[in-house]
Structure formats: C-alpha cells, structure tokens
Image 1 (tube, one colour):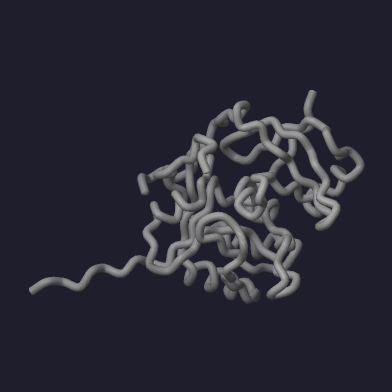
Image 2 (image 1 turned 90 degrees about the vertical axis):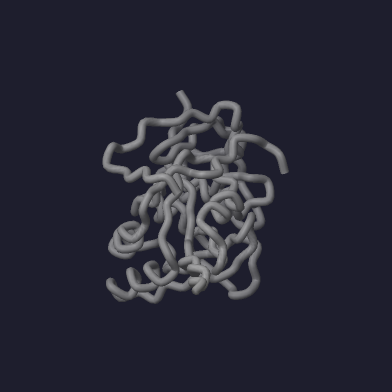
Length: 85
Length: 131
C-alpha cells in the first residue's frame, strides 16, 4: 500500500515540472522512507493523487510527480464555507 | 452622476483549504531564487487590481475550492501574533508571490494566518493539461 503524504498542492506553481514539494521538516520520519521512484499518494483536505517520488539534488528537496489521471476528490469537512466566488 | 468604479481588494488566492497544517506543509525555502536570498514562505496568487477569479484562473488550481484573503489581512494577522509577514513577487505560475514567513512556520502564526482565509468554490478549476 502506497505511503500517504500530506502536501500543499500550491507548491506546484513554483516547479517547472509541476511537481509537489514534500515537506520533510514537517514530517521528519519521511526521510527514512522516501527514495526516488517510490510510489506514494499525495493528499490535502479535499483531493488525493498518485505520484512518484523524485529527489532534487540541486535544492536537496523531495518532490512528488503526480499522475493526474488518478486524481480523486475527498469529502470536504462540513464546516467549510463554499460561497461562490 | 456616475460612481467611480469600485476598487478590487488586494486579493491573495490559494488553491484548496488554507488550514494551519496546509500552510505549514507548503512553507519552504523558495527554490531557484537569488534575490532575496533564502526567501521562505508559502505560495499565493497576488496582483493588485486583479479580480479573485482572475487570480484563481492564473493559479491553475486543481482543487475544487480556493482560499481567499487580502494582503492587508495577512499582514495584520501576522502582527497580531508578533511576526512581520511580507508578500514578495517570486518565480512561479501566474501571478505567483511568496507570503514570506519564518521556516518552519510556527503553529501560532499558521493558525493566525489560516483564520483570515475564507473558502469559496473554485471558479476556474483546472482539469486539463493544456499549457
């Protein structure tokens, strides 16, 4: 079963390859588990997606390359205000 | 007599639900940026004068919801718990800016910043892969 990693999908906007930043400062235990090529599930409060782990040697950070064909919506907490924009 | 056009608030827009944990997960040292060195923070779409839906579209967010606040509210929220929060233009998609915060983002600041975001349906949900 793939490791589930909580992420901020907004971090895609800073990556030229649309990869998601994996915050190992927030989850130090991940450092022992991550390796390039590992299949994981990235998720936030309302969606999840399968991804393959990469390591950026230049910036020394772990990233996930999502397979967007696997994106799934998750139930949103009921307290969320969903007024139209 | 015509009324002057209403000025857009200085929106800051993010994809998804800006919970404290979400802001902490997204806070990092910005990669590939030389000036200012060591810019740390989380991403947001920001451009004074742009409407909320324009910023949402520019971010190409895949989330069903967006989280919205204003630059003024973010700065005030930071000050309320003793931190100077800045909004700095930085490389990235659309009108990308970095909301500059200490890294790692402390929980008290994350809670204060999260509290000034409200969630709305994403008016421009990105579903495709077009460039």
